Length: 277
Image: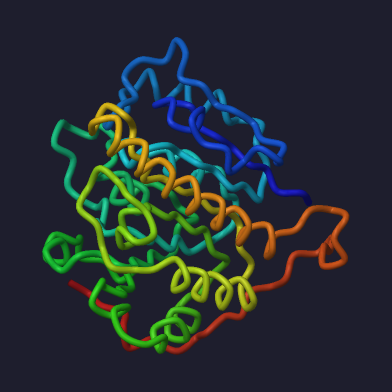
C-alpha cells in the first residue's frame, strides 16, 4: 500500500516551505473550522474527524506548529490494531485538562491513553525531567528521558527492544536541538541523526503504521528574520524526515514493497526502562 502524505494547513507555514514539492500530498485546510488553535473544541473535533474519515494507512502527516499536536489523537484513533505510540517530544503532552475534557496540545496523549482502546503502549523519548513527575500512574508508559539520549546510542537498541506492538511515531521538532530545528517552544538535545538511527532500528524490526511531525515556527512568534531563519531550518528537517519515511515505507513500485506488512518483533520480557510513576 502506498503511504499517504498529509499537510495540515492550519497556520499557513507549509505554504512557505517546499520539502514536499515533488510529492503527491493531500492538504487538510481549516477553512470554516474555528476552535482549533492550541485547544480543539467539540465542534472542531467533529469536523476534523469528517475531513480525515477516508484516509487510509500508513500515513505521514505534517501538522504545523506544536499548537496543533493534538491532531495526532484523531490520526491515532483511526488505527484498528493494537499499537505502541512513540512520542519524540521535549514535553510529555500528558497534562491534566485545564478546561474540563477539552482536548489540547498539552493533554492529547493523556486523553489518548484513556480513550483509545488499541493504544497499548506509550514510549516517551526526549521528555524533559521537569515533566516526569506529572506523568499519570500507568504501566503503559516507557521512558527514555532527554538525559538518556545525550550520550551514545545504546538507548536506540533499548528502544527497539522495549516496543511490543506495531508502531506509530509522533515527532515534535522541539525534541531536537536548535542545530536541527527551531520551534516556538523550549527545546531538547536530540539531533536528527539520532532520530534517524532510532527510526531505522525500529522500522527494521516492527511494523510502522504511521507517523506525524509538528513543531513549525509560524511568523506570528517572531520578527521576520527569526521566522525566516527558523522556517528554512525546519524545511530542511522536514525534508530529511520525509526522505527517512520514504526509505522505510516505499511506494508500490519499489522492490521492497510487499502485500503483506512485516510482522513486528514482539519482546515478551519486561524492559528495565519501563516505569510506574
